[in-house]
Length: 250
Ligand code: CO
Image (cartoon, rainbow, N blue to C red; front, side, top):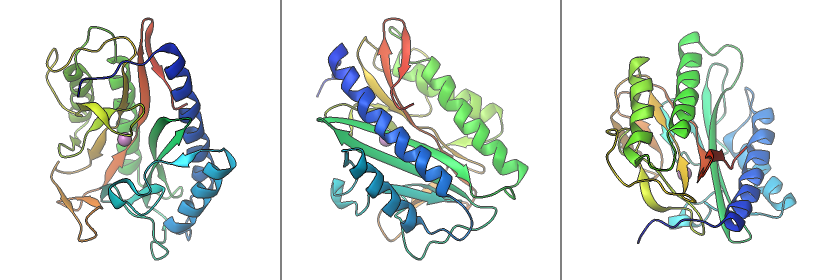
């Protein structure tokens, strides 16, 4: 399958689904606090999607059971919301949300501190990961390569003393949640597919405070750091436009 370039009308539809994703995430972040369970976030997300007339993108995708991924502390991505998972003071939680609206997908993630007691080191992990996403977005320009996007993340993250996850990557997005190309958070400038007008990329750096290694828990979904260090995750959908990158999920 080749990389699909979207028309202006399609990108407008993706801006709408991206807007729904942002509304859901903005709502959920107001609910995050000590004592809240990740299942409460799941239920709030499901309701919000319904209110906004969008369908969840993750539920049922390869039999994934929920509308959100909620990944706490050493969990990197694909944490499954649970009644038993209570957020505690000092935790960080990644909330990843996808919807489909009028046939087009939106996908975004944020990682938030559960309360003010999160350590300065963890706050730095969140800041660096989010900043690396914006570095990558800046590289999402016509004529650049996919490797320029990954290199932008990797260089910034490693200079800050953190490491990028290799086993999970960003992706093209459009009429399917995952389209070509794969968008790694590491790479070499000038390498990989060239970006063209109308491509839409879900760029999603996953950054570990310790070593980059990962493993997947027995639930077959939850990816955690192999060394038990903390991990952060931010994601936006970005259209490659003639006048530069356009963030669809804000
Ligand atoms: Co994604």
